Image 1 (cartoon, rainbow, N blue to C red):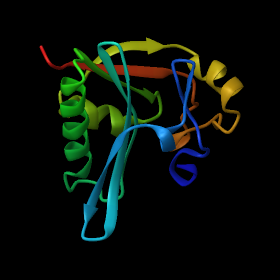
Image 2: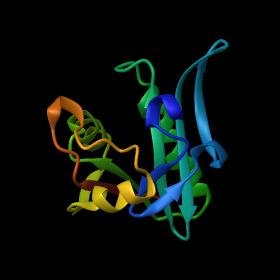
Image 3: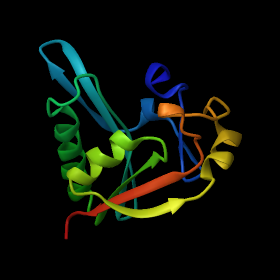
Length: 142
């Protein structure tokens, strides 16, 4: 978690998550792991808290999303959602191709997130200022 997320915690929508204690799925090939997804169920909604693939463009992320979606349906969820940041253009493309839709842009949300997790940098990918949380969602179990 520290290597991929900069700390042992992840903050989304003002909530501190500890991925190491959340339910999740690991993608393995033999004894080598290639991906990890963690999630949190709250009522009839399931949030994908973390999604990491060490082998992009090989179906690892898609398989992990499918596993989380199945867990969400089994838990009685109607909504699968996640947060990404305004700089993460690859994630926006990836999630939309897999059926997620833009639900909200939470402007300047990272100011509050930095109060909870000071390790969040001011600048993200491609030199884009890190400011906003982008919420994506899909209906499940309907």
